Image 1 (cartoon, rainbow, N blue to C red):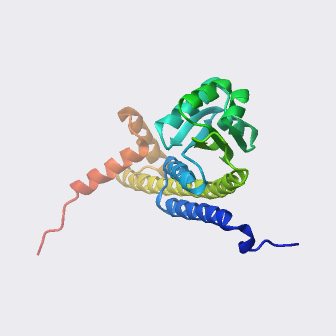
Image 2: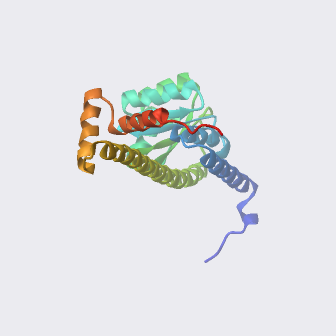
Image 3: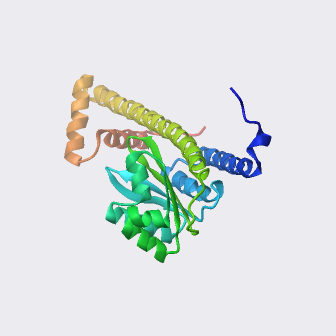
Length: 253
């Protein structure tokens, strides 16, 4: 197997790979700072312009229950062009998102494949289109879309570069999504344990005051929560807080 040396790749390709690498490093930094998927998608959208040669504008299309929307875009212009595709159900970003394949087209090719989108793109002075499918998980999929003003189309190399960047983005966002799910589950468990603790405290006070069993004490709490239209945990917290507030404080010597 022959391996290509860095010198054989040539300066243009090396520069392009450096741009993609820098974009991925910036994304990794953003993953450490952000918990909001929308904010991360916005970061991805901005980086595409710098990572892929010749890109003038970019957007990220996401599908929600099969319905596409633009999660982020570098300008209102491409948001509008994305919207034309959604309305007509035809365009490079939808083809990429629905087929799972990279789509590259010039304005002339677009006129044959997506005439309404092509007409709007000509009016907006956009002449080249490149979209890569994006799949994070069952709830987050779509496409990363690149727009260029020149009509000669993106170079053949640009497609694999965007595909490389998109594949790395998918892996990063997928890992981050699992992390957020785990963090959410941990928060739920902590909340459940805290609820259990304060409810047990309230039950203990009722048991001691009225000489009833633990089950009977909980039934009293539940009945009172229904009467007051308040959650059992909130009622228990209020009950314990009232007891603490009424308890006599030790006098200072």
